[in-house]
Amino acid sequence: MEPEAGNTAKTDWRMGIVNPSRVTLLNPIAQNFRQLVEKLWALFQLPSKQAITRPESMSTVTRDEFETVKELLMSAARYAESANRGLERLEAAQERTQANLDRLSASMGEMSARFELAQNRTQAQLDALTVRVDVVSSRVDAFVSASQHYFTKHGESIEQLKGISENLSGILSYLVRKEQQQ
Image (cartoon, rainbow, N blue to C red; front, side):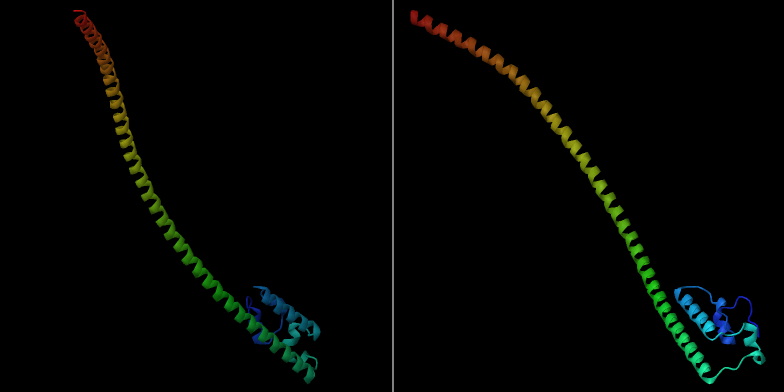
């Protein structure tokens, strides 16, 4: 019975046809399994696939050889099952990791949105503060300008008053001397 084209090595094993070239190299475990089958093939010097499928052309195999092959195949099957369980655990771990990465990505997206919102709020507060500082600064500038104007104006008045005071002082001194002379 010839396997259909495209069947994997697993199908070939179920049909009793051993052909290591049909093992698909999906991962290192499958490659190790292929090497094991090739070693078995070479160890027992099995005839071609056509010879295996035709019992009349098979050479005689002793019971011990048959048991050895049977044990090796069972060992290979256990190894393959163990490898499959390992792959299933690895796939489950990979799925958990991907779920964690998805959650982390969503969390990072939320954090980014929150950060952007906080940054926008901070920028708005900074802009409002800048406006207030500008208002206060313009008020201070106006106060300083008015103060300088008043100081200048009063300074001139003070100078005039000092001049008047000196004149009055001089007049008073003159009048006091004139009265003393009389």
